[in-house]
Length: 403
Ligand code: UDP
Image 1 (cartoon, rainbow, N blue to C red):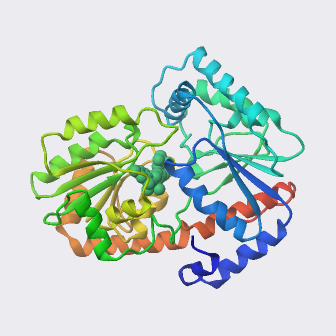
Image 2: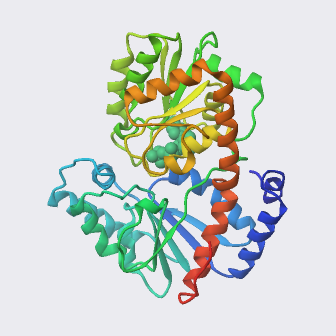
Image 3: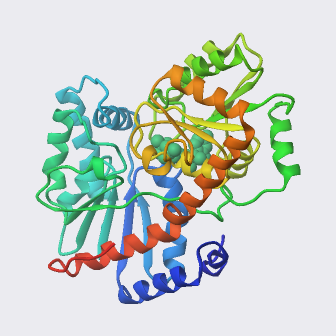
């Protein structure tokens, strides 16, 4: 894995020096992250890289994962959708299942950190075992318009934390505890994002039987309705009337997402008649995701709701032109017509894709601008700095901490 030194050519020496100074101020503290899956989805993606780098900085950082059965993850997926504002029937039985699994985790998970950093709703009830240590709740979901029943249920836990962290200003809620706005990030040196030789990119395309004879449009996402894979197919079909092109919909599954296989089956059915649509169920393989992103002409992220949308930053870092929905954290990453194109509908997505395929110079410029925006705002080094400032703030509750 990349060492801190290797980030200097990308972000500059002073950023790395800042990180070292901040880590020194936290010497002796143990920071314990807790989430619900070690693989799959954006949270695991970030922790996989953030944890080793924080340890290299000298901040003792641990990562634990809660347990849960199928029923528990079905309920938490419903919560997730409901918090994103999707209509979901949530019953008392669902809350009971959540509380039963939480009771098991309260018994089974040791919360030994000086700072316990809990990610998303699945492990939120662990706060009920809080002792003298500090507790943070990190919300990765767009909760700007949440289902009130679920939000109220979570509030009983949230108020017991020291602070809450949201990804974008529009997600913040009225809370009696301190709130921080810290957007996620990507690691430019991970297998997912590092430079790749062209022959490796070609070999991955070949492995999945994708020819380079016509432009490739790609969406990389878990097979989840909120990522609107069917909408992507509809947009592609509109583009296809004018430009001969192909579509890749590639995704794996996350352990805490039980809906994936069903959505995949629906998508396969919709795509079955068109040999230019490639539906790929990817193994957890970051190099392959990287190669597919790099091998594409346009990246699409047509989410209906989005916490942040790491895939957008990943594509922009590769200087790819991106068409993405104007939802959640996406407009933080894309300034419309400057560093990508934002869309609001299937028609809008199709129009934007056509525009990019017809104007390669414009597409290239958007991609280049996008890359610089990611360099300045959405790389892991900025994220680690903000996390360490946040940790320090817990020990200085009266001070205003400048992020
Ligand atoms: N991802 C992956 N393989 C897949 C699908 C997604 O590695 O088959 C990665 C993707 O590259 C990104 C993360 O999973 O790093 C998804 O994060 P995002 O914020 O886009 O969405 P989430 O899944 O958290 O809703």
